[in-house]
Image (cartoon, rainbow, N blue to C red; front, side):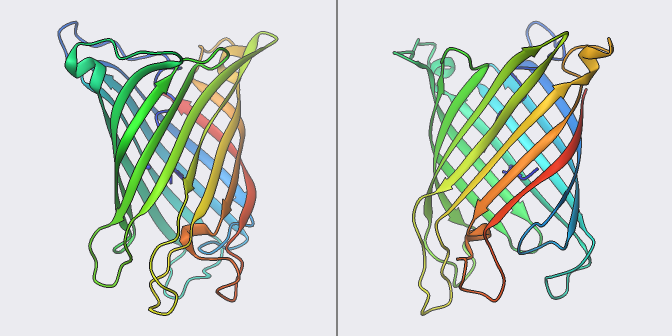
Length: 267
């Protein structure tokens, strides 16, 4: 999962059983998970087969919430020069709730809360970005959670990097009862809406769209092992102009359209 496998995104926390914490702790709840994914036909940085182990953490606090993840990826072939067939990527995404901090009810219409969202993205080498902007949590019938983060994303100041870009990141989760268990449909979209840099200067970053939903069956509930603890399912991954590399500007495809089988355990 890119939690490009999008670090922007609080998907599991409000759905899943929370760890009990002390009554006067600023930590209200938390949930952690490990996922294993197996897929093919990834673009830019992967060969025919890609395997990923992802750690995710989601937590709610008296001042807001936190989501973070770390992907460890292994490829069966190395399409990037100098690659050892393994890479990592992670995101750290805290959000400050203006309603909680001010002690005011900021809800109106479908909006439950107004927040300030921050994300730090980190990959191998100097692949680092900082994102900051407003966010809203929404209350919409049929959704367990629905949020929209709006960011200004900026590289970490490396010489020659282009100016920043604007990004819109909706995240969602829907539970669908099926027989004696449930299907969980959750995910996120990262939409970088504008280009940055200059093709002539060689620092061009193209606008791009990354759609990354998961459809998971609560096998643990079906087997009587406990609700929301063990899932099996599929992750779909569509990414136009992956990593901001414009499709057609290099001798390989950068538009990605693939899926991975997955197992996910919560603890």
